[in-house]
Length: 230
Ligand SMILES: [Zn+2]
Image 1: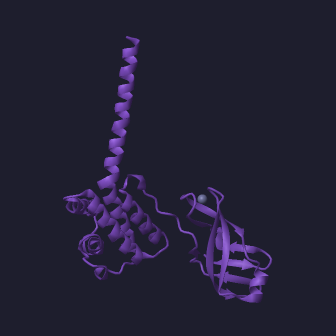
Image 2: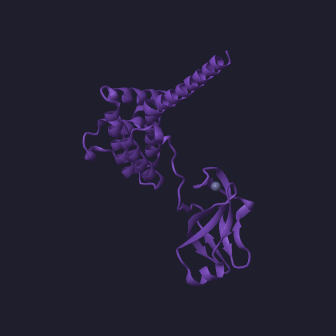
Image 3: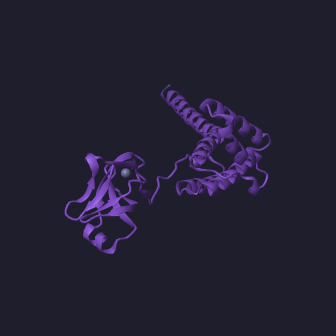
C-alpha cells in the first residue's frame, strides 16, 4: 500500500485500500476516513520529515490523529511511509471498581503506561499492583495469586521461556533492578496474565457476591408481596 498526498487529488491510497484501526474513543476496529489532510503544495515547499493527518472514525465520528514519516518528495506529490504513529492509543479497560483501592490506583497507572507504549514503566507498575493485591488478599494471598497465573499459563498454552519474564515481574524480582527488560509482545502477555489474575482474585468474587445479593433482595421482595396479599 502506498500513501500519497497529491497536489491536485489530495489523499490517495493505492488500490482503493483503506486505513483501519482500533479507535481510541469507541474501541471499535473501524475504517478511518481522511478528514483533515495537509496541502501537498505546502508540504512540497516546506519539505518536513513528518506529516500529521486527522482521520474520522466511521463508527463514532471522533477525530483520530496519525503521524506519518515522509518517504519521498516527487514533482507533484508526497509519498508517505505506511507505518503511522497513533498519537492517541486505545485505553485498556478493566472492572476497576472491584479492586482494593490501592491496587486500583496502581493498576490504572500500569495500564496508562501500557497504552503509551512505556513497557518497562508498565512492568514496574505491574509489580507494584501485584504486591498491593497480595497484601490485600491477606495470608496466603501471594500463593493463591501464583496458582492463578500458573492456571492461566496452562489455559493459554504459554511455554515456560515466554512465561519466565511474566513470572519474574510478578513474583521473583526482589528489587526493582532485577526486573527484566520487556518488549511489546512480552508486555502484552504480562498485561493479559495480570488482568486474569486480578479478575480471578477480586472481580469474580465481587461480581458473584453482588449478583447473589440482588437475587436475595428480589426473593425477599417477592416473599413480602406474598405475605401482604395473604
Ligand atoms: Zn470510534
